[in-house]
Length: 557
Ligand code: CTP
Ligand code: MG
Image (cartoon, rainbow, N blue to C red; front, side, top):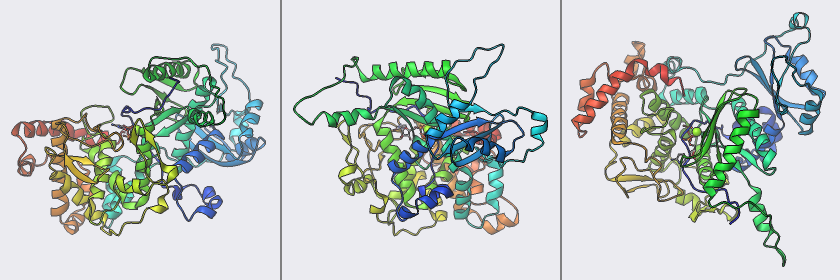
């Protein structure tokens, strides 16, 4: 048949991060949207708005000393500047967003092409510029220090210190969330990276778009995580509906290939080559075309992101939107996910390289499941969200019904008033005692169901009901997770907060973000009844290896 790109497949595990709840958008947007501020924007509305903004945005490398006012004045001659910020990434950079798209063309027309004696430049004109002072000595004298917006989170040991000053675990969890979540500026930078890749894709496919998915947009991303992006040929659907009208049909002649996979590989291969050969600041381009979900990995130096580019995967987009909805429903959801993810990273349960460990995505789904199981539930099951779906929310992808409500205001707020103090402790207790041998985690039903096969950890893909999203997890990794969960539940229950505070010892969330084990492995053994001695030995060994540098490493991904 014709080129049909969206299709179900598992995506490569990589980092990406996210999006704040839409109401936390920049001040300028808050004013503009006052009319609809009563309701939260849908996922699609937020995405569309941010993609449009990114197309009106440029990135400028600046000299070390710069006069902010003069730079803005210079740029304003090409149009009104809607927002801007500076950040440090091997030198100072400015992200500048214009109010209108034609300002970009006007600016591009006015700027020069570099001439160097040693190099030949590839004449591809992007939206990445370098700003130079013609007379650095006298001009630098006019410099004013610019505010640099941080693009990474504080190291774990600094976080732990901050947490110790809080007055409750709940406050600690919100502090962690605030320190780690994506900022408005970082989200803008992520959408810009996608938009710059789109400029290459459009050279071949003028209707294509490059959109972020995964943790860059699902509200669960943390500063520093990778950007998952996909190429979308959205016009294909529009043409399909157009063809239904009238007595005739006209269609494009298009190259036919034996499989969708092959088409995906060919497209990604060419775009990967383009990025590699002509993309300013694109380096370490790796084509991973034989993976289950073919992708191109590259590092985008101007924005500082590690990127994973794949071709439109409708199911992954639905799971990004589902998580977005859960993340927006109740403020406790994101606070709990961020704490659990940070905890897992510190204890080596997750890792930035793919392997047999639990992924952040699986961990997030486990938190969602736990929140569905509270009484009363904090978030609805996927089946309940499906019942609320309107006509426009209908999505059937590859035979799977992926419909669920997109309008957040149609979902009744929860009556559950439990504190995060309780939820954090109960999360560890719940999974510390979960019958993983027998049960699987099903978010569609919000219930444990018998495992359909013997994978150690079985979490149903919410949309492709025969896929396990945590198939990669092996028995030792699962047991390590259970042991750490039990240890953490125990610490949270037993500790005397007041005494710890007097002794200036880490308490609450801070206490479980410090690697355990080394201090008293025998104490830990008692809480691991039921786990094979073989596993205990390997667990203790891994603890010995990990403890020393885990805190430091955790500052990584
Ligand atoms: N995905 C999936 N099934 C999997 C793994 C991933 O459907 N087994 C989809 C999810 O939509 C996920 C996205 O691919 O959000 C990106 O995967 P990944 O980068 O591994 O997870 P993130 O959610 O982006 O989390 P991280 O911050 O660790 O990158
Ligand atoms: Mg990711």
